[in-house]
Length: 124
Image (cartoon, rainbow, N blue to C red):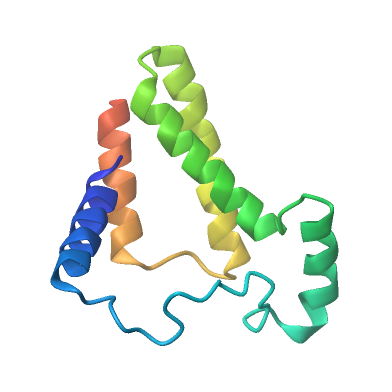
């Protein structure tokens, strides 16, 4: 698990212990997993069809693959496999950035990329 994930989990655990999540609206009620209010109206039918057929929308599928590669990079020591995973990760990150219609300017993504590349020993 990456440092950011560990930190987030630690903060959530601390908040739970302090009772920050007690008495929230809807506590104890099941989540509405069918809520698609955040999906643009013109895409809802298509997304529902994808979901019912067991597929993810393209942008979510890309993010899922990025997370899978991140997990792989934590466990693999083979330099050749690391190189292939690194190349695939760069393609996927570029795809996400293009999907936004602009290169990402978020500093956290750059810091993350630098740390990942340093771990892979690329020196880029």
